Image (cartoon, rainbow, N blue to C red; front, side, top):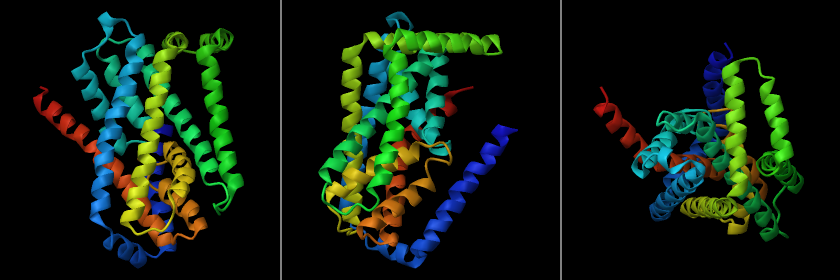
Length: 318
């Protein structure tokens, strides 16, 4: 019943919130802003998407180094899983749907379910930590500029940081992992208890791979930098007169909003976040809404190769 309600409510929320923000921004003004876009800067942003998708694939595959070599699928299969899951995530709740699809497909290739889920969770955790790092650096870089409600920005970073800290403690603290195991053993169903134990052990295994985690974190930071630059290029395409420091401060927070599994592919919340943040620096709501649409569309463009692989795979399957 809850799953059914989720399937109904998420699209409705995306449509309702997008429609509300669009109405506030004035649809005709949004169309005028989009019509005057400079295509050259959009092409640059698309080229940067190719690089960030390659980095995202690298960081997840690097996290699979904890799996025994004999049980690790070949690189071609991993690349297919990554790009297909990013495509499927376009139609699922935020990034959570794509992560679930990736873990499921990996487990079907004889990889233990706990290890498959742990690799996706660590990938997501390091991505959030990278967003937090860029958010703090963005606030420092934008010091002295009028960013509107700084308190709201700081509270958002603190909340996301607290959640990340709990996850980090489980990875690096045997005591916290023991607590997680004890909680898992109290779950009602045997399959759930088994999965919880397997997941905790697989997550704890990353505590011994400091070098791999460091490299993946650096790759995640590079991805976030690329996304900020992509948004800046889209802003230039729309002739938005805002310094890159504004994007450094706002885009990490908007990415956190887009990670919330309350809509499909972040549509709706992302439009509200773009308008809410950028309008506080003098950017018109119409330009901010147009920027949000281009930013989401850019992500969809980056997911299209996965759609091609998915279509080819289904054609070849019985």
